[in-house]
Length: 230
Length: 353
Image (cartoon, each protein chain N blue to C red):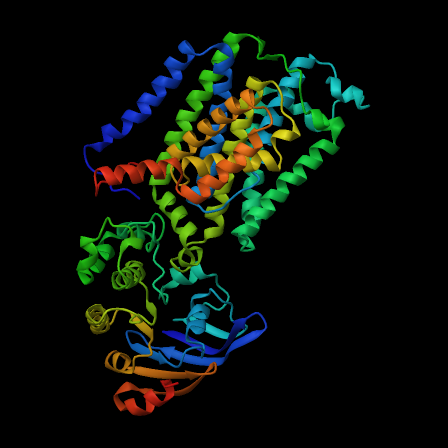
């Protein structure tokens, strides 16, 4: 479904991605692991279009996204949950979710489905986004991406700095999404157990390229941990 | 921003109705002709402040060039009034500057049906174009402010330099009548005052609807995270350009209403200093709240009038002091202060935006 082919990208002169290729098949969960600074977030930003790819191609289904601006990629079906949440602090939970749906095309069914997944957000519905705890904000960011009914969801370290009980809730939601199989997920994660329990397939990045990949069933957690330890 | 409690709808209208009564009935009865004229001028500024609040308070674009749009609206109106005052002759400043015929671009301004819409459309279109070009190049924050400030400087220099066409430093003066009614007649001024007050009320209500709509939420979302809006599926460039165009158009409207009440428009009213003053109005009142923008424009100008009547020359110090105090102690302006006090009184209840 989502295919990244030999993509290079970077900031100004500095190249961060050196020909990254990966694939996220329909309805599957693919994990991307690697130490800090190897280019995981850069790759996600290149996929969503906040950074231009200097070469290579990004495809969603049979649509070439490589040259499209971010908002058209979002409309093509890519949902993005950035690291550090990135909710709108001065909008209420409800308004945050409405922004997640396209202008003039509200989808009450999708909204209701998402609130079923995150009952906590229903209780906070008219609270300002900025007044939520970190874990609640993470759930809101995930919900905001889901109300737009994406075909692929990009998650950038959704468990980082969040209390364990909410990590568990988020994992449960991701398991439900995986079981439904309606959305493919590319999960950036440093927490090996979390990644292996959710993922169907994994990639490991080092210095801007993929250095290891495989099915999670056959993965050796100790060997993976080796790649991640500093 | 605020939860709409059922039943508070009617109560929400009370302050508006009170303000309307005060401005439309009480003020014309109580104030002298001179003071009423002054208030009319302040109400023009309040219209501009509403537009600036949409641009800055809601969308996060700090414009230091709002005077340009105000000036363009004012000049469009003044060109019409000048041609009416010249009664078919060449306007006086043109003959002093050596022109022998009316320049082509002045000719259509002899018609009110052209000049008055242009007073809104020209600044609106310029603001839209500037907003589009700047946001398309991802220019925002302080850089956006600097470029808009440069715009104010450029236009001042341009208007001073092109004396045969603009009246130079003096601007356009000696305006006598509007649709045949003498501008010196207190009755004409009273009507102009009432038109301004009604325009302010209508602008306020329209913007209240806009800011409460999905579009308004999108503006706040852009202010707080432009990139987040991008990957949520929106193109912020068009939205920001539109908001800036509305702000420019409202500044132009304010300028057009200002000129017949004050009788002059000059480059001094569109430059860097007045543009900064406009920002202070919104900052003092409370950006991001429409009521704050209106209150700020009225209060700062009231203070300016009284200070400069009693201590001429002290105003610029007063303005500077005010700005520092607001930035340090009242980051949300007076409306923010009132809200905070209100919250302390009855905790949990939110104020009305």
